[in-house]
Length: 154
Image (cartoon, rainbow, N blue to C red; front, top):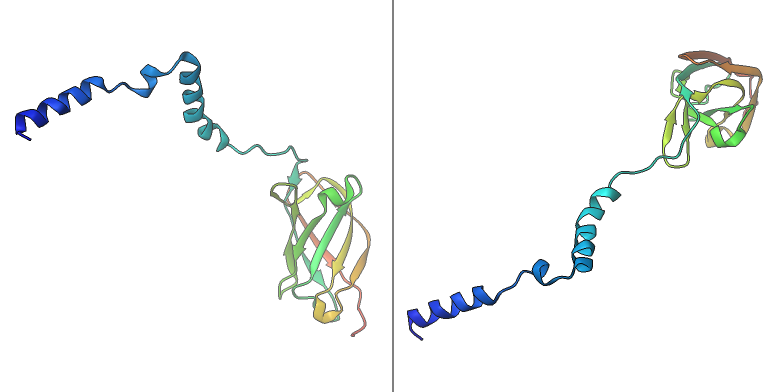
């Protein structure tokens, strides 16, 4: 086939080509627009509303064995287990609290009185040790020193 013939065929092919949007009815056009816009709207994640939380950190003091790797739990008088704040105890006995909420982790704890317990690490028995009294978390930065009773060795 000659060059002239090939060029003519190309021009005819381009002239007969119709854009899918030109051939589409208004309903099809709207559907295509929705398909192009929809992925952009799905990238925004909705968060469930949560109660405000306030920073809480502290230190465990004990004359017995420090529960390194154990967990401090602050259970609020209101909303109980839905807003249970917890933090891991490090080698110096320090901890900071977080609330594992439905779709995210909230820093700190909710405002109000809390019952406190220390969950011992598994190598120390893994049992909960209740701490006497209540601890009041206020709408500011909070710091607590928790006196842990001696726990008999396993």
